[in-house]
Length: 126
Image 1 (tube, rainbow, N blue to C red):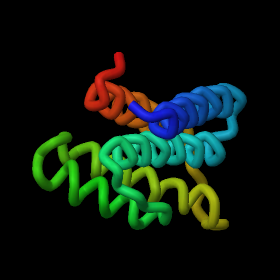
Image 2 (spheres, rainbow, N blue to C red; image 1 turned 30 degrees about the vertical axis):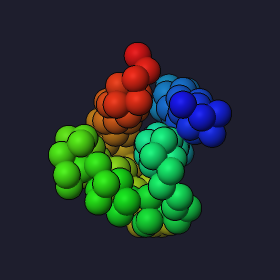
Image 3 (cartoon, rainbow, N blue to C red; image 1 turned 45 degrees about the vertical axis):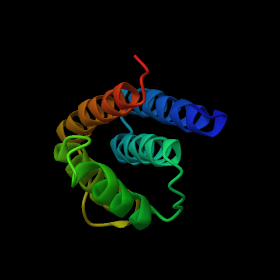
């Protein structure tokens, strides 16, 4: 495993820790955003592990689905989690009308943990 892949996993873990702290302090929209970024970094680690170079969020999402979910290398539910987390992040970051509330953030943090665990397992980390 390359240093770059390890660094992406470290960023993913850190983002999830920050999300948990933000939730504890009542900052649900900010937590939702960090949960997404945890998943994004984990997806980047997975893609980079196979030499797949993408940068844009939409490209990461697409490549994750194409190379891993669609062929069944990773459960498709994780691709759906990534897509849903991005949609929630966009609401949290840009929508002035809709508020991210605690039950949504709690569900997403559980998904973030599951997503990161699945990626770590795929890459041979425990």
